[in-house]
Image (cartoon, rainbow, N blue to C red):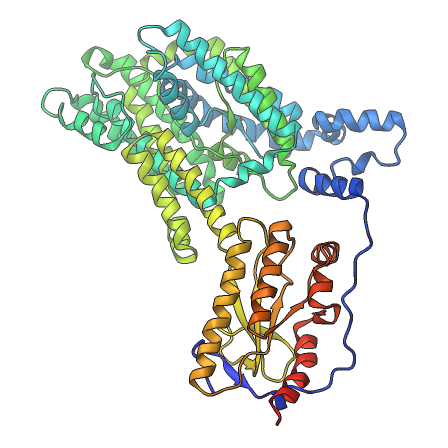
Length: 610
């Protein structure tokens, strides 16, 4: 007979096959309070056991290992060779060609002068080369951080009216950003970053890409007066209000032409062997356009020459283990040092890191090469950038941020998890229609909302026995699974804490009520045993114990015996410490669901027989 939940009733006479032995659930060894606290702290903050390499080592060796841990360059530097340097030199020169046209304009997104973008690709990469552990990451300013920092700073100080204090505020913000990163790393709190879901990040980045691209219409169209707001409505109003008197056709021709060139180079560069074309295209565009403006004096015909550029964000760490907390320390240190040397916030650039990887980097030396090239640029050719058309740099921005819009990831998010899709779209529309900070706030809020929803409303399931096995699984996933007559088997798929204990108790009782109503309608024997499969229950607190006691009391009033199956060591220890095991009876706690059913089924047979 098929029940209302899709499962099948299995007659108890077919469920009394003999098992060789019913195992008793073991009680874990009792630990002292100090050991329990130590184990919890170690698993929470030191799950990767970062100090294991120091064990059983002499003091002198521990000192050397400590230096190598803090400065990994002294570890991989011992085996560095000329063959590795050749690959690193090519990679460094390649990423330098990409970073220079971007960095001279990153500062503009932050409302700073062009040279500050180059400073941020000079000092921070040098610090990271000594302290960072990634072989692939390329350090420098990135688009979203630049836009975010500029948006926040101009809300406090107008950069056009008080540029000195605005500059001080930018360096102060960079200093405290570094202090925050250092704190997270030193106290091994890097896991807090994981609370921002991938879906929210995808939406936030796509929204930021649209916002950044729209901001570049000012340079691409040659508009002199442009809104300082970042939402799409204000930007489009500013663009269309100047269509008849504010657009410059020479600027548009230059900008659109080079934008087409950059997009074509980007497409060609998708082939691994031709990646260098996409890498050098921005620098080629800057050189050609600068020469064009210098020769034709286009700057006297409305073609502006302020620096603006962009790049992609996020570090690329591949093929080997990276200690996230150690990376936090390295990134924090470089930003603290950078804030003292006229740099603003720098981090790992995804676009440069990808180019660095494909160019054949072997160590962190490409960051040093890039820094030296940037230094030469600052010393020798910075004055020439005054002839670089703003439209060209806007074209570089637009071509770069296209990579931040991941349509395939959005489609995949929709297919996998609809709530994730809501978080993704919420962050996207928050950035596009309001501001970067509102979009980030929405992203964080929705990420926490999902965590709270999953914690407070965990899943439960009715289990049935798969044919010709002793395995019990969710009857919704396995419709062929048969429920045992007179026995209801429920699985709880979460730890039981104060935040969800009452819900779990009520949900189990609701399962029981629904099942009893169904059995009564079909004149079937009532439920005598309720087995709770507890293998997914990793932990329980005092509220959870209290909820189980209330569940037991409610079941006793219904003349239903509560049975527990497969509790873990943490759970068993707390069940005995609270004397809950004595309450329900030691003989009602089993190692597996199969053993619990095997024991309860004969009792059911005795009860149903006249």
